[in-house]
Length: 340
Image (cartoon, rainbow, N blue to C red; front, side, top):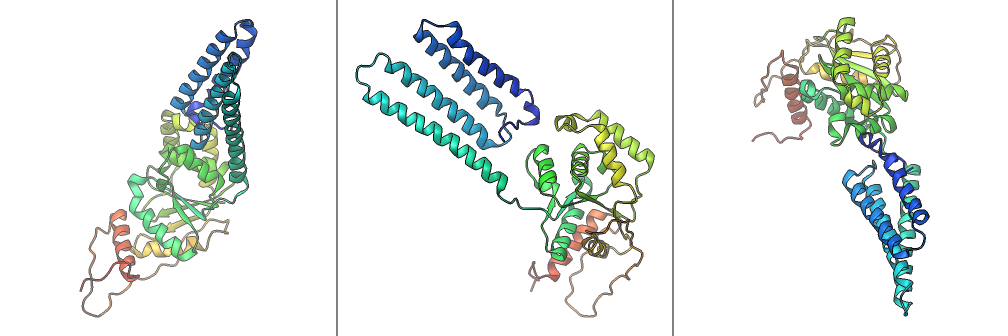
């Protein structure tokens, strides 16, 4: 449970072994000088606390805190034991030693109970996880998320909403995501965060789906090779997560195969295309074959009444269309009050 270091601290197990070796070495090499033994052991434990609190190797923050706390309690027990050899009144020393020992046992029990509860307690599952390149599709995926959450009544999560390391994002994908929707844009597959999420999801057999605009061409073999070449040059984040380029290649091949559902969003309907795509996407969670929208809605007609709010945007800009569609959607749902 506890031997889960951060990817950038993969070598910390060697430091842990060195500490254990030095602790065992002290009573073997220094046999007849108890005062010197206490000094050296205290120095080792103090140095360990300093290194551990500076590096913070454990993935869970509470594990780092408990590690430092238990080491300090061991240090205090060592000092109490050393003072008891020359003390005439053992009452105070015995009370302090008992207190520190009880605190140490309590910390160990608390750590074990917390680890057990985190394993057996149900985690909040994410019904639909949306992977995207934020620079190219931020407004679009937020609009898609809003529509999907209303249509499916399931939890929809964007990868950009996890404000932590890429390692935490990948953990979410592996342990909580039930379906991954890749919102494809031009440079999406060339981004290490997107590649890590797709490869991690494919490795644990999470259902993959792809959402693409009709104005966006499906990636060709040359596009895929170019993305792989870019990832090889910027593969450090993937290497830290132990994700190889072979894993990414297998995941991309599966994503672009005929077995992966692909929903093409019509680009001739303006913001209505998002509604059409999310309707099909919400009903395609259990579909295995490739999908493509064939029925095209007509553009909605403007209602013939006064007091309308006109939202103007660039019809060729998907981000502007998504922002305008979100404004209209919020107004229709009365989430934004109409001006008097």
